Image 1 (cartoon, helix red, strand yellow):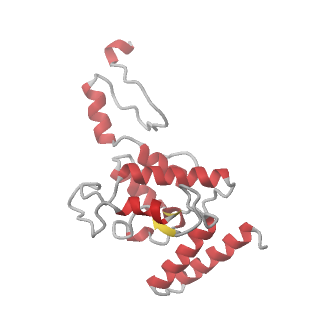
Image 2 (image 1 turned 135 degrees about the vertical axis):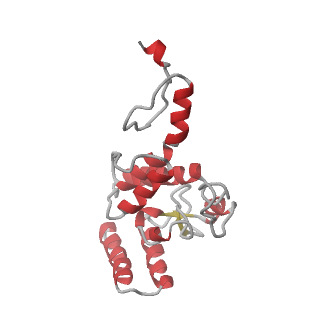
Image 3 (image 1 turned 45 degrees about the horizontal axis):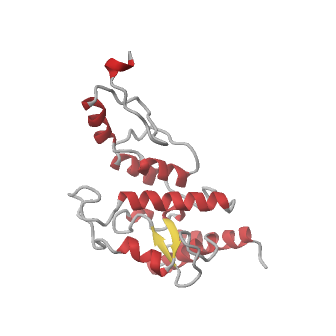
Length: 204
């Protein structure tokens, strides 16, 4: 049996060669899908099922085409688990509307899938930016959607950073919430768990 890391590297090399040589989108997506399923050990990351598998784009290709071949934007799902992300709007996004206005980009779902991917990768000891790659451009765009300063850094591998970025309360919303309670938004705040708002007059 070929060691898993060698299988991963072969599948990744096929994807990278296809993209670098400008092969058709259909061919590149087939190589991308093969890599994602190989990396995830040919089972659903959410429920461990081994039948009816598909490689799913966490952030839709129609929403962020630049991420269509990024390995950190893929997760293997079974038919049942794959139904959930596609139950909502699945057409072309209207970029004049807020990100999740049409229901196609469910921020909570995106967050949970990035989290499931990073937890699974850590548990199987394959968490590596090479196998779970997300571009600087993608992470910067995530921060823009969350109204986070693009210069703010988040810890961990890129897929872990994606999870942390998406689990932040939108900075615009958080700023208003804090100001309404007499508090200010600390610079470079990173939410990693529950927090308590302490009004400034009580904090003194």
